[in-house]
Image (cartoon, rainbow, N blue to C red):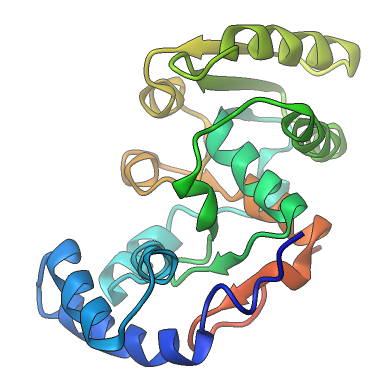
Length: 232
């Protein structure tokens, strides 16, 4: 298991974040600003991705705050889950990879972005942890969407359907061409940390971040002044 601290230099990232946030607030494109700041501070690929995924302008933070709901909001309602997005966050926590508490209040992983999504035993463990939370909060219905391009995603969707039925949770699971689009179109409360999904959704819950905070709260790092996410 890897330690988080050696992978991300939080002191350097904190300084770089100030410059990056300033450039974003002045309207510079995210990629252009990231290259400038990354080169200036000598950031690694993982550090650049951490900065990119965690830093947002005040306007973006305010807009997303209107959409973000607590985990209790899924009780009795319709829940749409961006499957691999959520499960990879939980899987990263299980593997001991660093997670970042971002400006917009969501928890995102970094290193899994450099690894292809693979379905294996740990993916099933991550699923069971997510299902434990769903069993506790009991949404009226839940729909999981998985990218069909991932090997064995159809088999995995069938496995999810069986587990939902076994737990008495009303729901479905599908392997689709674009899981992010399907998640948004399904509606209800949307579980995803993907920025495009969030931008196109009305209500968002950080299901992956919530589970990760239960499993490995010590792996959730902060860049700057934000505190750790609360766990009810």
